[in-house]
Image 1 (cartoon, one colour):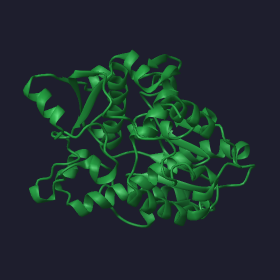
Image 2 (cartoon, helix red, strand yellow; image 1 turned 90 degrees about the vertical axis):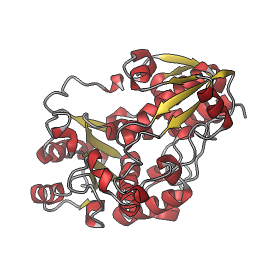
Image 3 (cartoon, one colour; image 1 turned 30 degrees about the horizontal axis):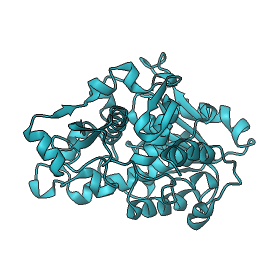
Image 4 (cartoon, one colour; image 1 turned 45 degrees about the vertical axis):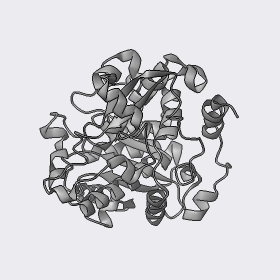
Length: 357
């Protein structure tokens, strides 16, 4: 297979498969067929990070912000690097995901703890040589997000010659590249899929993504109400679940919402990692709080978060909010069907659009 065959066209075939597709992974974990992709070893090959046409420059992509914000910028930085034909590495040196007040609890690498390597190692001789020779170009968020063309928005097309992707549409490009770049280690994938199966027990389900925490204090967003979530669920259950109320997986950093949701719909089945464990960040995630975490706290938090991400990716219907990068990442983990990906409007977000992502 050429890289184009193993990437763009192969993923299109996979995403276009119907419910009769190979669901051996779903059967292994007692999950619906929609979970097969993320609960199987990666279908697509990893990106060829060593193959760089331009060997004079190395791109540096900073790891900045919370996990999905960081991953979003790394994904866009990786796309830009392959478009330019330049090797890149992820600079984790200033990331709040790694550093702790107690130095013994800091991580050597956040990425390598949970995922297959992304980009060249920061210790690679080529990176060290480029650093010494002042040949490092930083591709931070101003280069890949503020620049609308580099954001890879819906409807735009791009030529990524180094990967054999001619005239590939922006959102499809991100879906392909995400799967080739973001590859959770088998240990975490297995643990995640087992945990999700315990919640949904093989049934098709819906996911609510409820983000609170520092989104109010740091960014002044107004939170969606739990009434908005259940009202939207009422609207889509007839069309997507034949009128049968599904299990609803609640992915949230604020576990207090579980009581409110169950009070609003006492006869619905809400499930959540909140019922299994009280990991750090369960009462509202704030990035600054990570400084006080231990490595065990970090693992517990991300074990919970990975289950939530897989639920968002695998559910028949996703209901979330505009004001978090968690929704952005889940959008591109899912297939392209917009009728099953629903965003709730809140004050200040009513003019947002999926095309902008």
